[in-house]
Image (cartoon, rainbow, N blue to C red):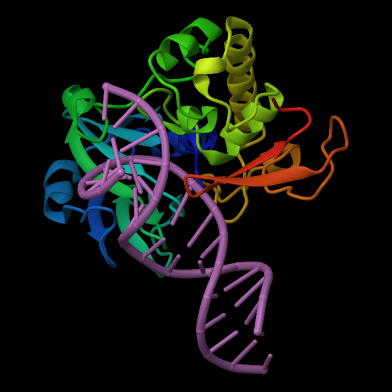
Length: 274
DNA sequence: GCATTACCCTGAAAGC
DNA sequence: TGCTTTCAGGGTAATG
């Protein structure tokens, strides 16, 4: 389940392999993703053009091409993007394939089909309906307590829902929200309205630290994630609470609990997190 | 305007 | 062993 760190790790591994490569052909297949892929438009706007940049915004990957066109990709829950030899046979759930010069193929597979792929004008990306409402990036510049407190103004809901709301802070998913709340010693069900400046400072530091550590570890691989070369991440060995219900807290030894909020699992230490 | 819930989907794992 | 059920969750729409 790619969150911000996984997409950033992917971006870094894709960039050197894609920069300067020219698209020879575009193939699509399988059932539609969250939205159908506009194959004719992708062919018309990408074939013959070379990649000039690979960027990231929240959990979206932006592949910029000559001529001011950008391929926007979202991996949803199970999306996997790899660069393979062009001769590699198609696999099940392969939705998009860019044949590149140099005998390579950029391939998007997404069994659960929560992902997204579309092309847009580079200079109009920020107005695109998928991207226009995204909140601020947590790492550049790094979030601080005052910024988080500002985003929370007027809200009363639980902290966990606040962190997961991509319109406020973009790119934090369930795993890193759980880990950041543990690190900040804050309970996921606690109302944002009860936090003081010191709490916001702790939370902002925790979000930044958790995301940076995860990027450094190559992301988290639970089921699906791998970078463009197929390398899996290692952050899961660093996780203190996520998926560890029943195990002892690494800080105090109390049992880690699982709590369901709005259909999402939260993992926490009820003794450390208040 | 904000909070909460349901929905989309498939594969892995758990349960029987 | 083999079938059925449950669970995973990002983003969005509908509902309260």
